[in-house]
Length: 123
Image (cartoon, rainbow, N blue to C red; front, top):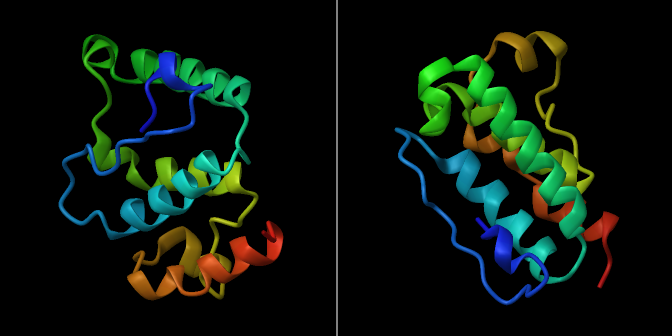
């Protein structure tokens, strides 16, 4: 979303640069993450470490495809969880551990996310 050379700038971010079948979850979480980034609530050093760890893990996980990026379709939940963790929000949003582990992710699962963010990070 933010180019590594622009981390300190905090004036631009690019959202939605992915191809997945149903990206409602990522769109919502990316939008909230971008607000936090533009407000200066996410530290560039932390972002750099996360990017480096993620790239290294994908290179090991996908072998020759890791250099091209990830198979994002398989990593969409993990990606959204990582962004929510950086925001200090819980990614386990269903009512039971069973639902979190085995149930589908629905748009309703993200209900209240903005209010939780506002309560955690008041203006």
